[in-house]
Length: 70
Image (cartoon, rainbow, N blue to C red; front, top):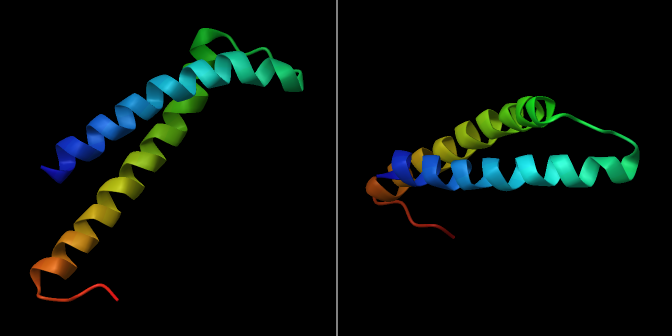
């Protein structure tokens, strides 16, 4: 289930980030097209998804071993 949760979380983040890229970057003088905005955001999406899924997997393994968070 952590895969689906991480994918859902990252997909929602992807949508929000594409919109932010389109509307926020012009304040700094950048005018990305929709395709450029998606490409920029896709890079961060992949990195964020891998990070999120990896962290969840590590914590899941740690908790299932009987370890306790301090």
